[in-house]
Image 1: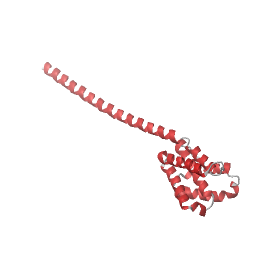
Image 2 (image 1 turned 120 degrees about the vertical axis):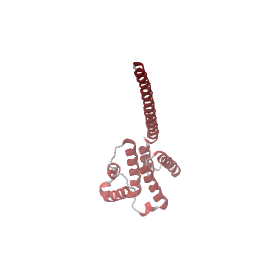
Image 3 (image 1 turned 30 degrees about the vertical axis):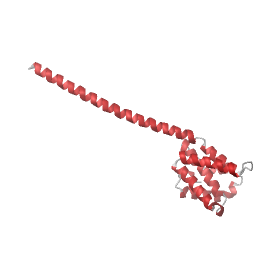
Image 4 (image 1 turned 60 degrees about the vertical axis):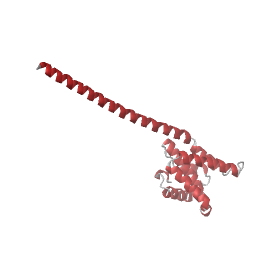
Length: 178
């Protein structure tokens, strides 16, 4: 009788060992799969960040070139086209919608029918959006206007209205409103 009990105990132990080994194997596979997925996401984010980290500067640099007579139209278009490609390839949905709407209005010449600050607002909101995408830091576009537009105080209402219309129209982060 003792031999039979020992055999049953040995069999049960063998089954339990096999069961624990199987459970350990399943847990290891699940953990490895999750770790691999997280590593892939981290690599994708790193590649995107490498591509867009200088993009806010490039957008603002392109804007500055609009008023710089040392750049010819062909070079301006080439530089802006490179920025658009990079935004479409690596930018967030909001950054793409800003530049898309900006170009749509350029093609339709709507910006000439409205006030001259609307195109400015597009550029600044684009730089602000990309800065937010890259750093997670939201900065009011108003700070740029105060820094760069000498008569901002006289045109604050017009700029504020255009800026806020674009933010609302494109459903952008409400922190970008003035």
